Length: 467
Image (cartoon, rainbow, N blue to C red):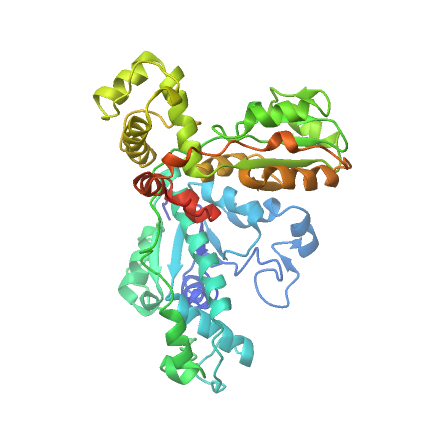
């Protein structure tokens, strides 16, 4: 046997036909599929606590020796089945191993769900031609199905991503392919066994429930109605072309007062006022690295971290004010010449008359929409990046304990201060200035929502009352 593969993995889910595929592969000399080798509840197959000389307890302590034991068999082609809820500690090692062939087996997820529920109801997981299927029907549970569907989609996306970033190719199979001799022959040839002229699917297993879904689901009409609420084509998806952001740890500020407060600022928000307020509690630390911040966290058990959300219209106005007063010459020229933002010479926003503020700010909001959608060559500045992406960046290191709306900053900081052992703290200095009334213009509100629709959806922002 000559092949670039030394092993294989069947990436599948329950009731996708993986038992039949395993039986077909095990019928080939020199090929062995070791069942669900990394299922946390069994060793390959039910009622087994040992596989390849390794016990379940040993696998629990470290699964990698079992992975190596199964796949290191020169002159033989071993493999196993791996589902989304199997031991996650081996997934990266499997996907990084270019000599491990990836067989991706899928099935209509509704069929898989119904089949799985029927198997649990009857405890009949396989059926041969001498056995009688146990008649049964299940009650469809919409929440359960959607949870299962989400897990499968997440796993398949993860597999696809790994194959792409590592430059590998999987062999994709559908449930209906498993009884097609031509497809099985193609699979075995792809695995390197071109010495076998033809592969017949295993014949010792038969379909368990070859009935219409309406006969297998007691609340079939209710199921149909629920499935209509799903959005398989993601028609309501909000496209996101904004660059991913990092955790921005150096921008964080901490104070040791009480059990410790850690501020994770969103640029363009209440940063200066909050740091000044924290300085009144004690010495403020900053310029953290991820290592030094972990040390601070360890040294302050019971600390709390927080970030502050500002309404997108208010935050865009703050970004516009910074562009008006402090933007570099090149940026101003690019905004003016390419993006049709009629910036005057550097000037404070309130030096412009209200009509000019509305006109130029509206142009700036139109630019922000294009910029956040990846339609400009200019990078997305942290001061106008979407808050949902900034918070997602934080989460790549640590999520804040609390997200505070700016309009409730004073009240909620009192609550947070009490949580770290600081009662009777004065937060009156944290009242933020409101947006000028003339900027609550209907056109500006609409433009801000168009630019920051992800933030409106993610955080439930409401439109301010228009003037």
